[in-house]
Amino acid sequence: MNLLFLDESGQLSERRFFALGGVALRDTDWHHLRGLWQETLAAHGWPAAKEIKWHGIRTGAVPPSLADAVIGMLARSPLRCYVTLLDIELGASVAPEFFATDEDAYSTGLMFLAERFQLLLQDADDVGMIVVDSRFREDDARLRRFFADLTQDGTPYSRLDRIVEGLFLGPSHFSIGLQCADLVCSITAAAERGNGQARGYLKTLLPRFATHPATGELDGVGLKRFPERVRRPREETRLF
Image (cartoon, rainbow, N blue to C red; front, side, top):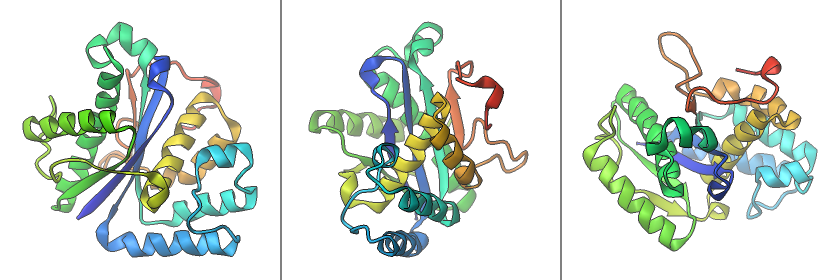
């Protein structure tokens, strides 16, 4: 079985920019990832029960040496990264059916990620499940209903018959996988906005992002922008 851990970055209510993404790994690689994570934290005297999040790295609450070590560890880990970047402001005018409400925007990001996870599972001839950072009880219930319909009916582009039905939701501070998802998603989103520290970390993480098996392309596979014509800061210094 493969596991896909997802987290988000940005506020849907602002109706501007939102990212949803995370990390996939095989269940047989889980113990290896957990060991690397715990060893890295222990080497820097960081309690295993204390979260490592991008917000803490950005504000300095996570010491820079530990932040560098964690990102380096992720770059060596048996992970495959996927992030969807949604320009809600642009999407509301050029593809309004995908962005009519906050729930629609979130569902759009989840749909793209589920399609890419399905392709990974087909390639591995395996099944998988998706674990999402819990939001609020009412939001979680709506998300479960949406995903149940999605796995039953498929998307306009793909059947999702290899994804175990339902979403598994839980608080991130109990999950190493969700903390990894937060870092990958939030760093990618911050790099897209032009944050220098995030851009440096993303360069380190890019080899872990999924690419097209034939062309090696990152865009549209491990990194999905929607709509495609997204306004990007520092266009002249794009990483990808």
